[in-house]
Length: 358
View 1 (spheres, rainbow, N blue to C red):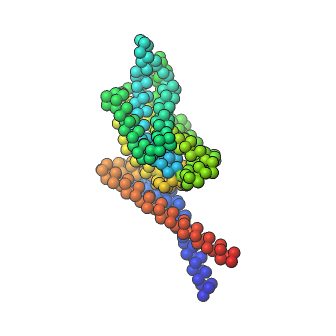
View 2: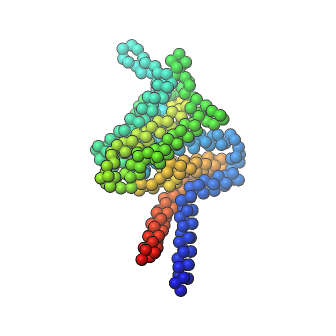
View 3: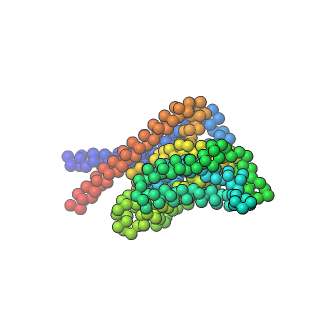
């Protein structure tokens, strides 16, 4: 009887282990299923032109999702990224078209690299404001970033009274031409935006997995009080993740302005929701302490392929919103199931180890 019970227990543990493995690979499995479905259901889905277009769409969400992943791992949230995208696009457009009026009869114009640097600085600055509100004034991340969402969007609208900055081709005399390279340029047949995504993604993955800062980010999300007691500079870590999120949002603002050769103050609306969806779908826990950059990028591909595939099938944009919402709910439910199963397996392993020692 004892041997039969032991065999049954071993079989149950084996089944749970396989189920846990499937749950951990859920994002990759979802990517394969979504890709396979649209390969058959959507016309021209497998064409090279569609892959290029789709990769550009995925890159925009992936940038934001990478920054959002770090924020969520620390137990926070950043609702302002979509508005920062719009503001940074308007900053770049303003600098290209108007320069900076010094008020003494002179206007200062910048070359394209200086414009890139200033725009990225604006994104990092807003990230720093978010971080300061959260760390110095103890404002809840949801409220702090909701406030900066409105501030950034308002500034974007004020910069042009709600109008578009068109024809951002720049002036060769000032060296401000070349913005379009980010959106339409390619290297070795791969869009420039994808190369930038690879660089940012690899950098973020290296920070998360290979540096003390990465370990501190996970420690803060796992148990902020314990991390502080162990010597982790919690406030510095939080400042970094929000500044990095702002940096990623600024990149997206530049890329979109480059693709359109124009800037519009409403650009980036609801982008934060897609970024959160990609991060959660990629296995990042909303409670903090757990998440992987690779998983987030795969999650961004799932969201991107789902969106583009539904468009190619002629599905209404309203239904697309409903489907994305259901995907997010399903991802969170599966994540909770994974956590419960992991805890159960860990307890069973501990009990088995105690029996062996006894």
